[in-house]
Amino acid sequence: MTDRTPILIVGAGPVGLALAGDLGWRGVPCTLIEKTDGRIDHPKMDLIGVRTMEFCRRWGIADWVRDAPYPGDYPQDYVWLTAFTGYELGREQFPGRAFEALPPESPQKRERVPQDMFDPIIKRFATSFPAVTLHHHTELVTFEEKPDRVVATVRDNLSDATRVIESDYLVGTDGGASTVRERLGIRMSGHPALTYTTNVIFRCRDFHLLHDKGKGYRFIFIGPEGTWLTIVAINGADRFRMSIVGTPTRSSTARTISVPRSGAPWARISTTRSSRSCAGCGASWLPTATAPPASSWPAIPCTSPRRPARLA
Image (cartoon, rainbow, N blue to C red):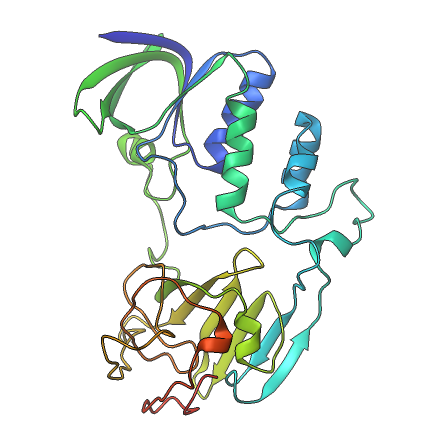
């Protein structure tokens, strides 16, 4: 079975969706394939820059981004601290996104909208055009460049069936581990690892009540070795990303404490890349489901060398 499309776009992240949307907006037919179901568990992006917002303004969807559910009044402060129960070393204050002034060079400003909020917006825009066809669970297997076309073989990851798509152009928007880039023999230079961190996503709808540092967008924990942990407010409400910093020779989850498997309502995590760790000391814990209100959390005993002794 062979399909035909003028432009085949591989990868339906924000770049691929934006390209498909722009082509559809101009009336250019295209097909966009994505090997996953499109769900975002770990948003890699959490800020829409000025230039991207200018594109959204051109497309008529700037208001969609502005009205995303990230609270407009949530402070965007950067806070440097030793621990939530320790010292606050410094704070750079930024207003909530609803109160941030426009830059002098643009009619748009940046927007704090994470990828799991932005992708559905740009997908809604792209798929509103009849010229755009989107296929999830569809993975690029290989392709061959011919003088007048590109012949790609794709696989349905649900049925394992393969088919051929011919196009005038093939565009790779499939991320750093791009199949398109690798098949074209385009090498990457430099060190392949930018950081050695363990990312943990956790939920707590009143997290700021657990400490006296108040609300902030990014908490940066400083120890003798420098920055060893950050916590970011993903959605300005109940979802946070904790990034535990490691090194090439030291695991970011080396410190552990013993936690009972039951009766620990404070040890509740939604998703994690490789480990679960205490927000106060970096020590590992055992997860269960979703965090209850912070008012019901007990003080957390911790025997890690990474003091303080308790988080709340």
